[in-house]
Image (tube, rainbow, N blue to C red; front, side):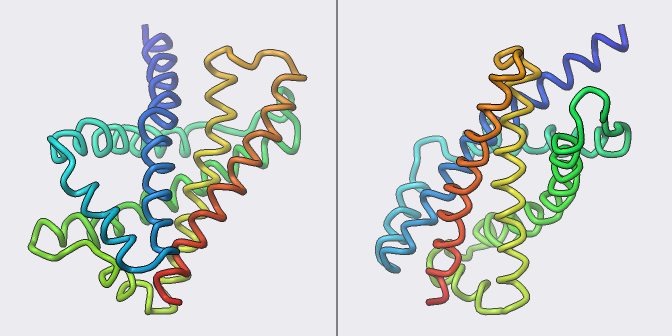
Length: 203
């Protein structure tokens, strides 16, 4: 019974990391990328997101609760599991190690980012270009956000590989090899989008 529960928890953890958390990450990076077109463009995109119907409800159901479960169970996995060199070899185990490291980083980064943006918005602050420009004007915070964004894009991209394997979508070694390159490409594309957005706020 305990093994079945753990199996289901891991499947759910993997699924939530892709849908909806991974999709939200992609959408969030794309919205932020509007900053590369100027302050007015970013603010217009932010207003659209702020005025979505049932936004608070959608945020809790589709973002906060899935992220909370993914983070808590992910930390449990970090301190319970070990590398599996016999099954996956050196490279995949290095990816698994980095997955755990970036997961811990993201718990800290997301908590701080939510505090700086969503909590402050609830207290009356306006989430706009000037808010992000002010945050990222500090070299320390810029480095912190660079590490956070790269951790997020890696964690999602590498987690997508694990999701496809654990859900039996990529079973053969050849399919897993192909998906490795696909997820690397996803990591690069999302990272470029994220980095361009960050530097647009301070350029």
